Picture (cartoon, helix red, strand yellow):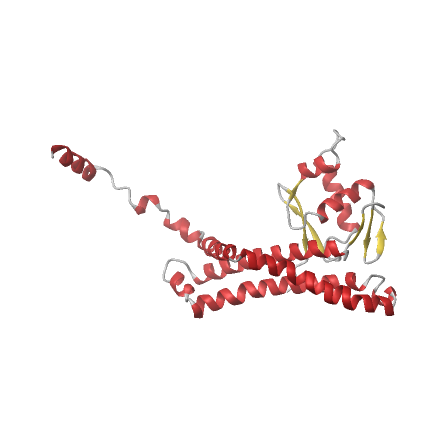
Length: 260
């Protein structure tokens, strides 16, 4: 009995370690948008099968029906000059990519907003906490951006498989809008690495290892120089539908142009 009393006394004398010390309320408020986005992303994970199936099925079926089905008729009954010197599939590819981006963003904004305001009223529950309206909006928009980038990257990969972007690996040539681009060996190798890793940040060190593995005198400035040349030759500032971005302190990332 005495042991129990002594334990109780020690507990009462100990310093309180409750939530006012263990939880940084101001930090939680500052990162409220992130927590909203995290909740949306966790919801997406529950539906990853449907998202992946739609992301793969939509471009494949559309490319088969429109890009290849109708495209075969267009190519057989016309000339490439009517389409700017490219096949119907290559001509259609930018529009398909833009449509995929818009549809993914619309899906990820429409249904969560209906859920938050009408179906489950989760936005009202969030707003009853220190989370502000702009935090809710920021979190939903960030999650929609993640979904859009994922969908467009998947769509772009399928377009590559269907040959909408022409890469002649054997001849080591790249065609842009049907026109062959004059590239050096290193520029071609670097372009292929970028096109195979759309949406992914490629560190300069990784690019040096893949392209200049046997050249010990190469530094990161060489990577920057070749990336700058590719940006001009392949129109990777947006003209070709793709943007090559320098990520500060990391490397480079190739992304489809966002269109809304």
